[in-house]
Length: 146
Image: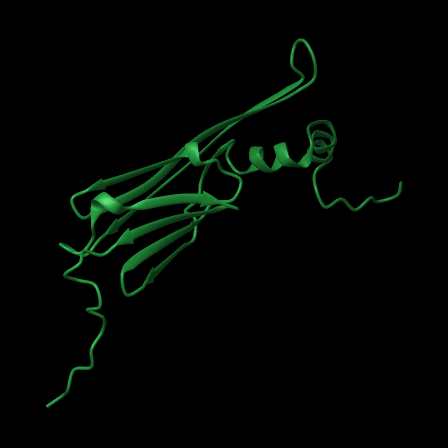
């Protein structure tokens, strides 16, 4: 009798062939089809505005919620997807749910909330936060040490 070396038990290999490796990865990681990812964010300060850039490729502008409550800016998204394969009675059907929420504390009495502009293009959500007139040009300054 010849010995056969197997990296995986035979039933796992059979299931992978029948269901596909993607489904097997989910089964082995706890059956979860929910993804919670926090997108990368860049924050830039210019003389007359702040800009927040959120990397969120593959989304639509309708997927985002942006709220300003006092000096708290919250960017969030909830998205539900469904993948169907086969005809009639389904042979494979998967649901997934993605969400994230980021909250930023803006400097008090600095942002002109009536002039905030948001644009989503090529996978980047850009939020421009104009500074109030009395704050513009008030950049960093060197402080002497005594």
